[in-house]
Amino acid sequence: MSEVTAQELEILSTKVIAAKEAAYCPYSKFRVGACLLTTSGEFVVGANVENAAYPVGTCAERVAIGTAVVAGHKEFKALAVATDVKPAGSPCGMCRQFIREFTNPSFPVYMYDKDGGYKIMTMDELLPDSFGPEHLSST
Ligand SMILES: O=c1ccn([C@H]2C[C@H](O)[C@@H](CO)O2)c(=O)[nH]1
Ligand SMILES: [Zn+2]
Image 1 (cartoon, rainbow, N blue to C red):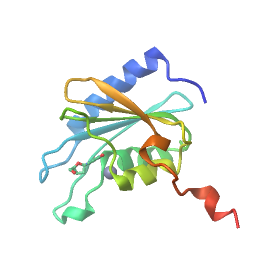
Image 2: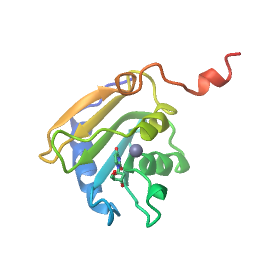
Image 3: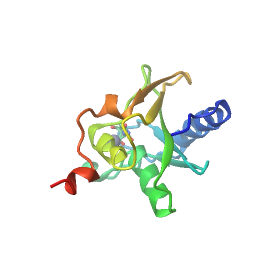
């Protein structure tokens, strides 16, 4: 899989930080933005969308992936997530599994903190020994 270029990273960081503003989070007041870079070079954003019935709310990462998939994108080069805290927030367990479905172990997740700094972790680091689609067909 090809590396994220400096130009792509610049756009990814701008878009993920901007995506936080789209969050609907009146309950937690915790804004999260997400931005996927597709292998075809497109950027798809998401933000967390909460609900008065609290557990029904959806994380930014799953909004971004669902939006990308229904737009026809299932192959990605990178995911960025942005929060207004430091150190940066990282995807919750449910999102890690959701991301895992469409990525490989070396897939990079960029996590941006409130100052625009970031750290990178791979999917294998975020969700080791994970369960995926290939397990369903390996009997
Ligand atoms: O990786 C994460 C972690 C949390 N949230 C959302 C869920 C909820 O709306 C708020 C507080 O948990 O942040 C995300 O969108 N992504
Ligand atoms: Zn989540």
